[in-house]
Image (cartoon, rainbow, N blue to C red; front, side, top):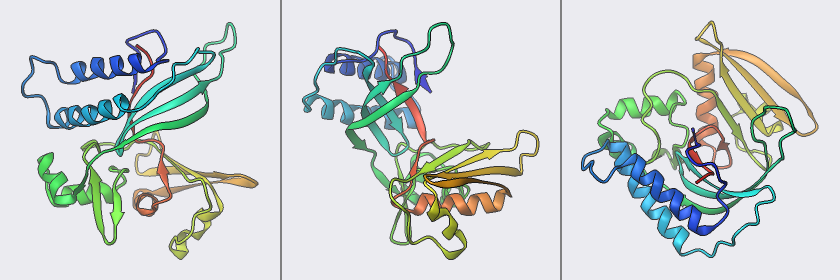
Length: 245
């Protein structure tokens, strides 16, 4: 989701810190000593992120289409420098980010599956099942074991569309998925009428897009292969975006 409480773009370090403090108070009010387990984790990670911002030299922007954005993903909290294309007069359209540069990366703590399960009061089997079904897309494969970032949302029901991408040509995929190596991006969408059917679209430079449909089991297997590959980035695990104060 995007935080649109403010109306001014974030263009300096003071505003970045102000935005962090506002969001921290919103997620975990001072008079709320309990809060949810996830809110407590978010508070801890925002505290680490704030310290990282304080220690970094961040130059003020003169706007001109440039801004800073704070993005919370399952894998951590990030600060980006972004250039937003100007909107056409008289046309209502979403903001389009033309350029994006990562300024600060504050990775969330990686937990063993049993630690993540205990933190969010679920069973070990439930946590592993969610990885296999593509519901915890920020999970990381360390050897033969899975690790889950503490910020990964404990999603229970439903399917959320997914987008995965990679910068360089992939390698090492199982033979049955080798065709994916020819592309640079893959998207998954659940059919609006038949929930057991999924639409898949693969795109890349210099190659025609490939589209096909598959069932839940095949979609889960493909996503698991992508999640476990170190060079693949999930673009759809964005939990929160703050670009205004």
